[in-house]
Length: 352
Image (cartoon, rainbow, N blue to C red; front, top):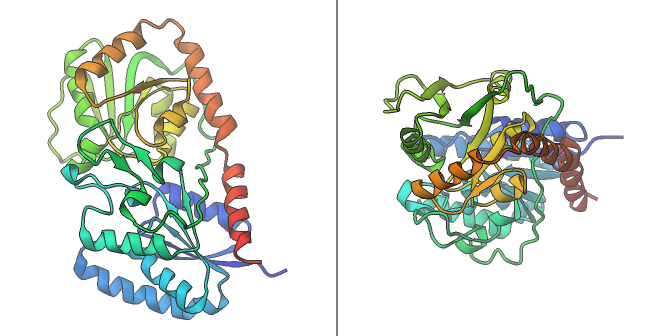
């Protein structure tokens, strides 16, 4: 029996996007186009290449899937309208957010916001990685509007069908190793190069906490080795790591920070929990849902509240039980199989 064909579009091939491609490839033929947006001058030739890709492949395709709404999803949606090629859009976070103070979110820039809203309005089905990306009241920080979610910024999308499908993770690869773990150690993973990411991921808050807590040890992964970052002696800056190196780093630390101003469903948080890190996260999007009752939530972006939270955490003598519970929560609830099954069910709705 001939396998159905998916045209898969994304603005990059990050680890979690590559993982989805691999999941889909087990049941479908997947043809990939990566729209590397870059500068506006590079965008036009990229869109032209995407148009040629669609012209060449749309007749043999059964459906198109766009990871993130934006420039990369405009032409697939137009082909959906003109040639009835079903189009699904996976909403990952930036396409459901607007934070002008830190220059984050697809709706900060007008043209990108228009492209994102148009795509979401006219696709067949929206697949957010967490339901909070549809709509949420936002109280963590004043960097963004008090309401977030694609239905807030992309008008006329409330009637577009949507189904949240959570990410899945490899519990066989990400495992705890209690022999490696050092007490009173905190780690976070991301990108320390760009100022907007530096603030959005909460690194500034972590460094401020480190200055107040010299007795604790902090590790920030994702430093390019060039960008100057003023940190105290108890903060270690490490370069970008591959998955194996990250896994080892997780097993060496007791806590994982996810103090983001905005997220969808953070992959690194889930992977750290699988490695037995006790999660400490911000009250943002899918973070409290991921953590559940296995860690701690910072309700507002405030250094004094974070310091008080850490004081409470360190007085808890039940930390080993929390570590085990964190791993079990991800292992039981967020599997590759579940994501693959739920994505396939949506695809089959439109390709019968």
